[in-house]
Each structure stands twice: as C-alpha cells, then as structure tokens.
Image 1 (cartoon, rainbow, N blue to C red):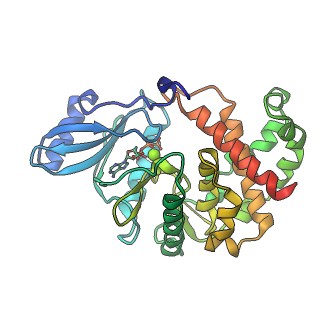
Image 2: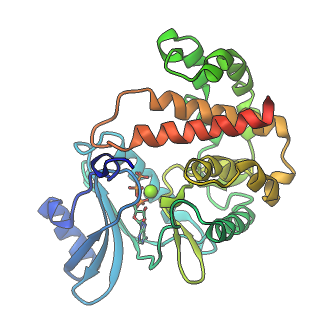
Length: 314
Ligand SMILES: Nc1ncnc2c1ncn2[C@@H]1O[C@H](COP(=O)(O)OP(=O)(O)OP(=O)(O)O)[C@@H](O)[C@H]1O
Ligand SMILES: [Mg+2]
C-alpha cells in the first residue's frame, strides 16, 4: 500500500486563508465560518472544505492562489464560469458565490451531503454511476452552455505519442509494448480530433473523487475542464480510472454504455490512444509543486487506458 504522505493532497484549512479572503466570504455569506472539514478527494493543494456556518447552514468551498500552484487559479476561474452557467437539470452543486482578487480565487458551492464511491469500485455503485452518465450525456446534448471545444482544448495534450516517439529518453521509460508501438500509437492518435468532435457538454475529468453519491442522486463536482465534444467522451475518459482501481473490465462496461453503441470503433481507438499517451507522457514529467499524488495517478490511468486499447487493437 502506498505511503499516505504521497497519496493525500496538501490541503489548506479555512484558517490558513488570508484574513481578507475569509472576511470577504463571511460577509457575502452573511455568517461566520464556525468549522471546516477538509475533504479527501482530488489533487488541488488549496482549501477544499465542507464549512458549517455560525447560523447552521453548510456550504462547500474551494480556494487557492498561484503560490500554492501556478495552474490552479486559472482552473478555478474556468470552473467559476462553468458553474455559473450550468442549467438546473445537471446534477451538480450550484455556485453560491465566487471571489477573485487576482491572486486568491474561491468558489462557494451548495454542500453535497454524499460520499465518494467506495474504492476499489464496487459493482453496484459502478452500475449506478454508469446509468447516471447515460442520463448526463442526454441532458448535456446539445451543450446547454458555451464551452471550449475539446478539439481546441486538448490539441497540445493529445499529441503526446508524437512527443514520446521523438524522444529516446522518454521511450526508454515505457514498457516494451508501448516502446515498440509508439510510432503506430502516434499514427492512431493523429485521428483523435475528428473522432472526438461533437455537440455534448463533457465534464472531461470524471473519476471517483469527482462524484458524490447521495441517497437519490449521483452528483458531479469539479467542472473546470468542461468542453464540448462527442457524446461518449466522458465515459471513455472515465473508464481507465475505474480499470486502474478495480477488476471491472472497461470494454465490457463500454459495450453496455448506450452512447457508446453508436460510436465508430476506429474513432474510439483514436481518442483512447490520445488519452493513454497524454497520461503516460505527463506521468514522466517532474512533479509540479504541492501536487505529490498527481504523477502516480497519471501513470496508473495511462497504463489502464493503454491496456484497454491493447485489447481493442492487437
Ligand atoms: N459541493 C460539494 N459538497 C461536498 N463535498 C464536495 C463538493 N464538491 C467537492 N466536494 C469534495 O471535495 C473534494 C475536492 O473537491 P474538488 O473535486 O472540487 O477539487 P479538487 O479535486 O481538489 O480539484 P482538482 O481536480 O483541481 O485537483 C471532492 O473530491 C469531493 O469529495
Ligand atoms: Mg476533484
């Protein structure tokens, strides 16, 4: 089992935020923060807490600045835009308030009284989530909000096999099948953009820690990467994370997923190749500041995506 010091995100508590940020939030909420409970899932090294207010209300808040991690404030700004425009029909917490002083960025959202799916995945919860993803893809087609196209957003990330194939040092760190197949995978990956285009709003970062199961709903949190793409993108990006942490067969799950039935297998393989290359490439880079768990997660997910692709093409 991994050492907990390398698996827990480096989170802040409410009291760690600058006084000006806390005061602005308490004034907007109309009550003081009485207690905060840091939430375990995810990676961002900022505040991610369920807050109890002095008047008994509960909210969820996340806050970060560039000193904690340079990329995070930009992602939180993107998440504010998405959360402010998601329609009521989407099973996601509503944005109550946001803050941006140019350094610190904060979102205050409805508190979701739920729990992350048990890990490793348990078949009953997995079936419930897959059914929820079918409904989600229905309600998000056509995209009810304007968001970046997946083709533009992931253009840099989804050419990673090209980068790997051109770099002997990176190639040398991959397993033999990936090493000898890198050129073929780069060729396959190059078809991803045409394959991934579509008119569905996709969360594009679905994993157990971005889902909360309540008594009657599967709530989806953490939307900064939302993009417009093919209807099956969310499931395709989600299943490697399931395969990485359970014995659930991603291909079997894929075949049972309604939106996948209309998908061209070559298109699916192209995007799966691009996803695997992206995660494996990123897993080989030095760890970014305050994100100690990210690279091992990327390695596990990239390996699971590649293993799945291998069963489809070899
Ligand atoms: N509205 C909410 N109510 C209750 N708990 C929540 C809510 N939103 C998120 N959480 C919990 O807090 C954790 C962290 O929140 P979130 O996923 O938004 O940030 P993050 O994963 O740290 O961000 P990033 O993906 O950028 O690293 C989630 O895994 C979830 O368990
Ligand atoms: Mg998250």
